[in-house]
Length: 312
Image 1 (cartoon, helix red, strand yellow):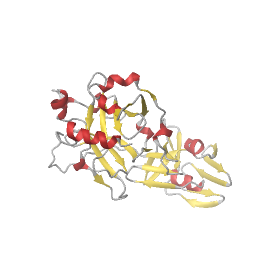
Image 2 (cartoon, rainbow, N blue to C red):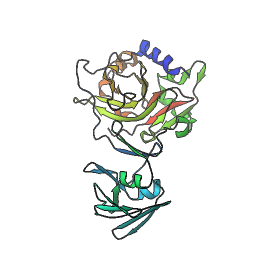
Image 3 (cartoon, one colour):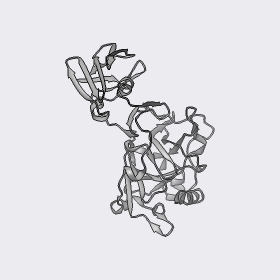
Image 4 (cartoon, rainbow, N blue to C red):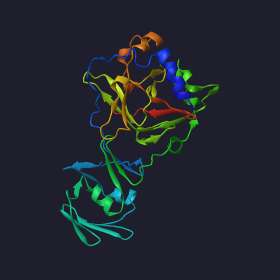
């Protein structure tokens, strides 16, 4: 499908790709993500930690012990401060607060000991994962800890399509994004930010976050492997308000030094074109917190929304 190219060209002509953005083009300031979360992925899926999240102690990531049983398939025995983990022919023994552990009877020195936090026991992630035979990789660009397979699932495997009827009122003055040739989308796939990374038809989007300039100008920041000159376009959906289409602010695009295949991209929340094209006189007052969904203009068999959970 070439929807992205078609809509991208239309938006360039009708809505403007970067023109009318409020940011000072001469500024060297780059939007920053405040407290960018570290995420643990098992087979390319994020792991939810409902109470105690992973912590970094002296450069070592510690994770709740239950993660070992729930996600790595280890059999856990906890007796007082003594921890025993078994998986297949592998056996690990350690003590909360201890500087050493044993793997199949051989003693190993730990960089950081296990600790108790808020009633939960946290253990060194890399040590436990490798001791249980799992591959582990640190991804500094995405702040991801990959465990097991790094094959990113396709959109179709992450979110099932549902009827778009309940969401049509979000497309005021923006019905064009639902059309591809003679086809009008009748379904939508609704994502959470925790569903990323996701493989779309033409790119992998690894994560989407909320970012700000020092002057508090808001952006959506994404990391992907797309090298398109136009960039993926987004649109902002808010009940009772016109759809607001947003092209990438290409001049802010970053190429990472860790992985040259990745690009960091920015989409600004406020845009002067909202006044020119939509009659929004108070366009400067728009905040990301007002938005219900962020639409992704990607090639797909349905519209694609991300619920606004970006922590602004």
